[in-house]
Length: 486
Image 1 (cartoon, rainbow, N blue to C red):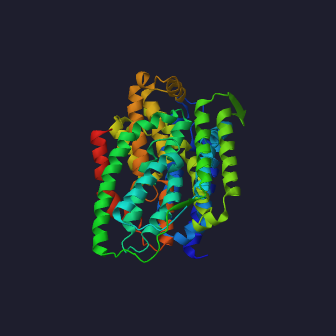
Image 2: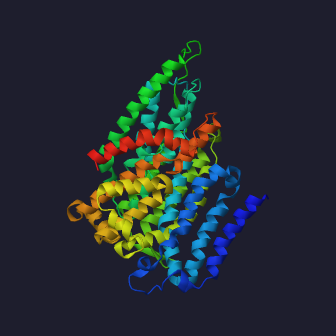
Image 3: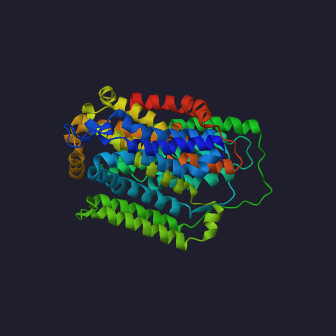
């Protein structure tokens, strides 16, 4: 192990050991202090949260080999850097908070991603498709529409390889992948909780399943603009390359193998709908109150995923170059993120009584929530960012999760809490759309980049992606969305 790696490990170990040696009173105020947990936690308690997110952004750039082999340990180190002193200071209360976020948020989140990833990996699209500009628009449009129903992860898995195969003879391919990330891996997942992780977290916290259909005008507006830009861009490059159509090779019709997996995807949709409609009471697991229908939903998704894996021919997954690495990476990293986000959520829920009072006071309108949620989603991953500002909106308006859950269930949310609905729209659109601003903004982004690079495409660097593509293309589109729709 070289000296730089030794130094990194010494720093990580120090982050875990040193806070644990400090007296609890120096770390956190007493749990019974006036104002509750969020009002008492210092702002620096979110350092492990910032640390793990900064690690995700920086390590793959400066030490890719080290990151690839040790990211689970880095995630665990940051998680322990918060968990050890938190448990030391709060004991039973801390255990309850940790179990609450893992049982109610993290585990359902990972189960849904795993189910969609596993099932979509069994769908193989074959056939001879020539990557003309209009054909490419159609492929990306299909992926965009599909994303809300099979998840951005699922849609990306299904559509990225057909797009790359169709354009195998093209010289300029980077823009294909970039716009695919913009639309299929992000903006397309706007319409249902299945589409993008932040919306699923909102569903778990009381937002009704079909409320996100209200985001269709925003999605359609941004998608049409981006598809027009893409078509013009792709057409110019296509003409410049002066591609000669292959008229000698026998045409091979497009076929879908493993189509039964679309039935399995429908089963997942049914399971999520069931958990939002059924009311079967609750059970207590390790002191955490859990809705029975949610437990049934998660078990159902696991069963469907296993059945898909068992009966789908392995040939399909081999041709899709299916591996477990992407979902394992998400699981390891989010295990650390969900642990370290606890103080951030608590502080933000405290609203103007917490350490982030200046930020809370500054964020007032739906536009503010759209840009702040979106900007942070670009770098902090959009799922935890959505959850953070979802709680911020509740705290600012003096609402509770149970209040909005009841109003959604009764169909009276617009009449009872119109201000919250306006803020929720800004939060939702910002989190989903602006996850496209960077490679780390949403889980599928890096996966698509990795698949493209395996296919021989030289993708831009982390900052190259931002400077050459997201800033000049996406931000003007989002300005228009903010002006006319938020």
